[in-house]
Length: 214
Image 1 (cartoon, rainbow, N blue to C red):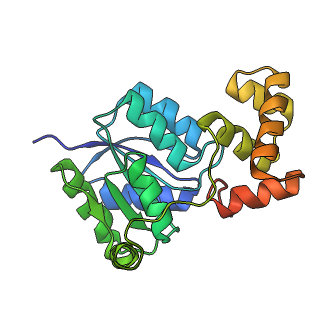
Image 2 (image 1 turned 180 degrees about the vertical axis):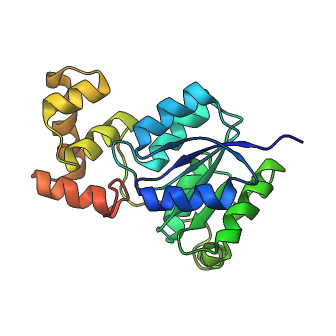
């Protein structure tokens, strides 16, 4: 059986180096990406068997990247490796098409185990969050969702780039939109979320995992 081809995504070089060392004897590492938009582009070019990604990534967060990836590469397996342990994030990741979910504080051996599990057609959830998922179902009756996310995919992309400090012209270039369209999306986002300043938009994006943490 040939080794799975894997594309690594994370915005920290040290994390990527660690993933490579953990997996290089088990997988063929086809590339690395440090932001969500580059990850999507590289994935479409390389068509890997597995992609690792984080919830919070620059340019395009992991959940929205996952949605794009599953549309174009439905057979590619997605493994989230993130700091977000809240069951709401786990639920969002799996709704977006994840096959695995680990925390960055998980043991290194778990990543190898997750790769093996997803290649066998199974899902893998680290025990560090599995207990919380079970408890949330027991107490709440259903998995939680991230609250108050009535935005479209395009609006979330614009919101993230605004919160990252990009100018209207930079956002328009990144998304192949006109500046007027970007301004329209920004005003619609503010109206939908009842937010009135860029600082409030940035806080919302941070709370909802749309910004990569330093």
